[in-house]
Amino acid sequence: MIAIIDYDVGNVSAIANMLHRVGALSAVTSDPAIISEANGIILPGNGAFDPCMRNLRASGLLPLLERRVLHDRIPLLGICVGAQMLGHASEEGSEPGLGWLNVRVKRFPDTPGLPVPHMGWREVCQRNGEHALTQGMAAESRFYFVHSYFLVPVDRSDILMTSCYGIEFAAAVAHANLCGVQFHPEKSHRFGKCLLRNFAK
Image (tube, rainbow, N blue to C red; front, side, top):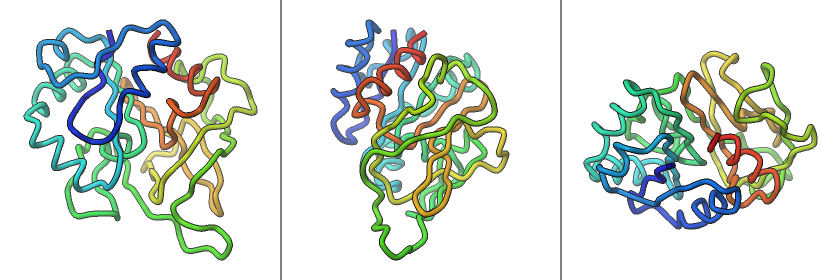
């Protein structure tokens, strides 16, 4: 069972619906008992970095999440701001991130003709070989993005996918049992279904 962490940041039902469509059992939850028994965790994120971090800390779930992710080493997938929160900090705010991944978060540079936030469908390229999260993914995979900030891993071997919007940026990162995607798989139709099916496996 996959626990989709509910800490009052946006609509998470779309993630649960997409997991249901690929045959995966999930629960949108803030219940420590359910999180303790889950064999995978999804950390969603919607809105700005600082409010998301404050909400997660206020939820009281952080010690349990740290135990499950860092000690039990169950798979975790961060989505959009949820992926950014896995790093050390974001240029968007002043709150410290979780520091579970060695990444920082930067804002897209101002580029004529390329409005920020970056919104819409964008093709991604796989990097650093095949990963369990990208297994069987088509070469021309496209995902739906809505973001003004992007992940910058210190170690480029942690980059799983890249995309381009004026500059090349990390669309997905992975290290050990931790993965983060800058796009929204729950809004990305068959490509998102493939990725979430892989995560569920």
